[in-house]
Amino acid sequence: MTRAWIADGAGARAAELADALRVVREGGGAVWIDLDRDDELAARAVLEPLAVHPLVVEDVVSHVNRPKVDNYGSYLYLVVHSARWDEDRPTLREIDIVLGERVIVTCHDGSTRSISAAHEVVPRRPELLAGGPSGLLHFMLDLLADHYLPIVDRIAEEIDALEELVFEEGDQNAVHARVVRLKRGMSALRRVMGPQRDTVLALTRDEFRPVPAALRPYLRDVYDRLARVSDLLDSFRDETSTLLELHVSVVSNRLNEIIKRLTVIATVGLPLTVVTSYYGMNFALPEYRWPHGGWYAMGLLALTALGTWWYLRRKRWS
Image (cartoon, rainbow, N blue to C red):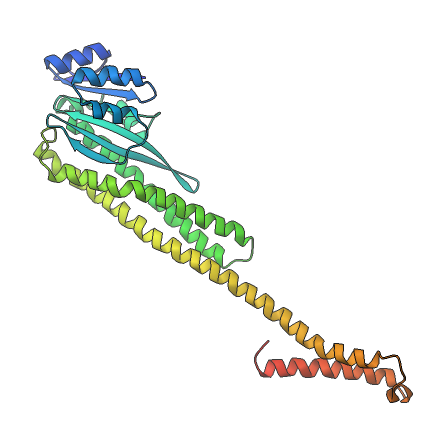
């Protein structure tokens, strides 16, 4: 699906692709063209008339690119990722952006919250696009950074919940699996966040023609939030590693306690086995002729068990 917007002094209006390309060539307004990457032919039909480099066209129609910014003089090629946290792992969507002085082209798989919000806002705030495509770029990056903040809050809550579950009785295998899934999800998020933070930082430092100097302070604010998210993810990585080690330690301690109890039971029972084996021999013993010999044997068993237990308590082995 291809959607196009044209913004000028009279406002912003939806337009056909041919009209949008004509405005880009002839001037008279700023243009935003939004593409769905699934339609490769439509992507090429938009980018090739804009004299976009073939390498950029190839990257746009592909599905796997790391966040980056490439400078082609009159336009920039950016790759950023939006994120949504589903249960215990992130869902990442790649957004390719070609930013010129009068046109911005976005390409993505399916709908993303930042792009959808831009479609809703442009008719109400045409100055975002009419003032130059870079203003719309900042709006998208600003929303994209905002959507990362609830994710780190969700991860922090998950870590706190897992810390409590580690010390509770229950299915520890399920707890271990949750910790591992959380660690993998954060690793996937960190692999995107680091390059994306550096991409926005490059927009604030380098003098790119499509990015006016007045916009750089606003982009620095976006960078600050992405840097905060990146720092929190680094901190969460250490916490999950510690949590995983703590879980293994707790499980090991519980296993040691179980073995200790079983060892005490076996140690108490060992002397009883010796006594019963002695009185179970198949020839007559003198004790058999004593009055109340049966009670004597039972008392000896009880005293042996109590004496073994007292010795273990004295040595603090039980």
